[in-house]
Amino acid sequence: MYYKSRKYRLFYICNFAFLLVASIACVLPLIHILAVSFSAKEPANAQAVGLWPIGFNTDAYKQTFSNPNFLESIVVSIERVLLGTIIGMAVTILTAYPLSKMNARFRGRTMYTWFFVFTMLFNGGLIPTYMVIQKMHLMNSIWALVLPGAVSAWNMVLLLNFFKTVPRELEEAALIDGANHIKTLWYIYLPISMPSLATLSLFTMVAHWNSWFDGMIYLTDAQKWPLSTLLQTIVVTEDFSKINMRPEDVKLISNETVKASQIFIGAIPILLVYPFLQKYFVKGMVLGAVKE
Image (cartoon, rainbow, N blue to C red; front, side):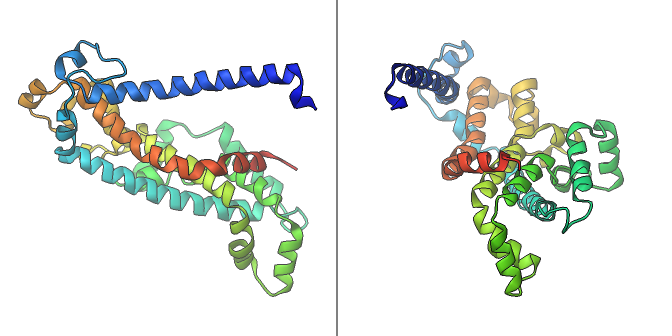
């Protein structure tokens, strides 16, 4: 058998070693951030903390959770993720379903599909997009973060190709029994497409949770910033005035430990969601990527 050959065993060992090194490289930064967040002020400022806390304390977390601006930014991020995922997936499903039909049943399907593909290659740019948001009176609202990216052409193409793999006989049987397209989509296509839907939902959630640039552009009120925009301001520009930290608090607690605690807290939701959807990834990505 091929898997008992020397070349296959050598490939298996090299592949295992590569994935092990890649996994460690992904986990070590998170462990370092966690260790810094639980360390004392002096070793954190001296960047002497490695993978284990020095002078263990929880002052940074107490300061973080007692800050109302930080907690409000988490609420804004959760609201953005929920609205963005629900609206984005609804639009993606309703777009991909008709475009998955044959040309004989949906004339012009190829032309519409290319319209969406065109937007993957070219876009209007930052200034025209900003003017559209401003003219639509979406500035300083959660909708400025949710609506502009509601239609993801990439996700639509993946789901479109997944819908094409659904056996035509199932749809024909449903139509013969009197079901319309809404019922066919709801009772036939969506249950079969759960791996692809779970994968695309996680992609959408992660994209909304990590997106910070649009919040800085469209939200002039820092009180309405999502968590990613707030963290970008704190970590990159080191502007602690946005979270209303008092000078006496800054003197008592290291900026490094506060930043590390907030980064770790910001990563927790995605770390909690990922294991529940990970089992759908391989099937969802592979079947969605196959094009007939």
